[in-house]
Amino acid sequence: MATLREGSRAARLMIWQTNEADAQLVQLHFQTQEEMSSAVIVMRSDFVDGAHYAPALTDELIRFYDSRRDASNAQGLRADWQPPRDDGGHSVLRFLSVADSLMQHHPDIFPAMVFALQPAQVRDDAALACWLGEWLHVIETSPRLGARVRFVLPRIDAEPFEPLQQQHSRTVHIVKGRYTMASVPRELLAESGERGPNGGACERDDRSGGADDGLGI
Image (tube, rainbow, N blue to C red):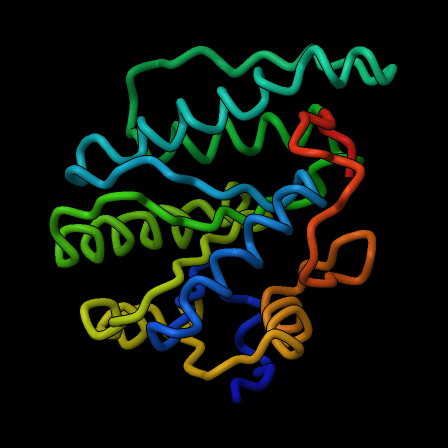
């Protein structure tokens, strides 16, 4: 069973290695956290190649916000954020700048952001590992932009990503463990440092009923 380590709180990339039986349980956990807290966002964009992934994540984050505008406004929350203009620069910096802009505009809703990377398709694990290495390099050289952002990558096979921990020992944390339904919320929330309003119970919020509840945490 995985335990909390001091370095995990500083990690910007956390790789959750589970066996096949537990993989769906971990996936369900992050989906539930997304429903309970705007600060946890599941990113489902396919990983085609490194050149297109950061723009795809940026577009997905903007769509996430746009899809909640009407419900948020109906609840009395001014969902008036607009993403900063794309200056055509580095695509990873663009993603981080958009996330930072959103956190600055809604600091009460987005005190930090955890992006659970769950691409429906990954064409090349080695290319994804290379892209994550590039992302880590950017946040290590631009620490302000990366200070409140964390990526979580659930994996059954973590071997292609293990060199990242060797190359970025301060910012990469690999969690290896087996979980049960009772222990997943406590373990994952302890490791990630994020907790939902109900203490992270691994259950669906029946109030949502499958509907959009806006941006409120």
